[in-house]
Amino acid sequence: DAGVIQSPRHEVTEMGQEVTLRCKPISGHDYLFWYRQTMMRGLELLIYFNNNVPIDDSGMPEDRFSAKMPNASFSTLKIQPSEPRDSAVYFCASAPGLGQVHGYTFGSGTRLTVV
Amino acid sequence: DAKTTQPNSMESNEEEPVHLPCNHSTISGTDYIHWYRQLPSQGPEYVIHGLTSNVNNRMASLAIAEDRKSSTLILHRATLRDAAVYYCILRDAGNQFYFGTGTSLTVIP
Image (cartoon, rainbow over all chains, first blue to last red; front, side):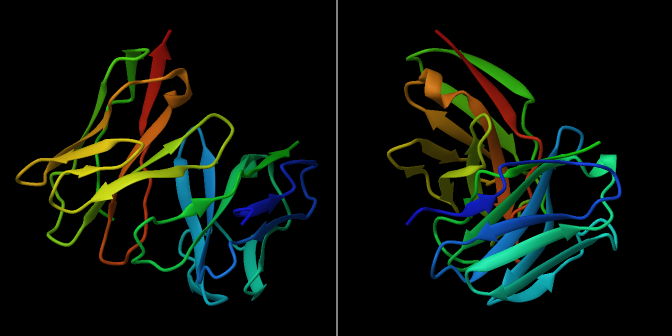
């Protein structure tokens, strides 16, 4: 398995533009998580899905953020409109279950810069 | 979410053992202790986890205090590739992971 695949690796956009981050989880993993990492706040859980259904989105900072999982092999995190304070590294992770031994497998992240 | 406390940074000489401490005084009886590490420019990766007994795997050992209020991740021989941020995390009843700020480990050649 190629692991959790995120795209793009880097994204630079202008303030006000829409940004879409993509994630392909490991096949067979029922859980998908989106995290954001900044120097100030560390790793923050934004939202997670179970079997394509959003379970907890309490970490989503505001309405400008939305996440979808249309099928088991694909998820998107969208920011519209983007702001400079959204600049961060966004990680996607997947897991076969919440009680599984090895926990989460993370992707390599998308570094977002909003100018 | 359950809280953990780790030193912000530590240094170790290459090929020497490293003991990374973590305090989790509010741990509940069903919380598992997980350790992840994050290498530069990568996502976090699983290292080891345990509940009550000490655990060993090919990457590290986990020593858990008898009262479970603290634990120590042990890297038996640090290499330059072990330089990373190490996160100690409690998995709570909701089975979610909440990452703190971790310990940044520097390995000195």
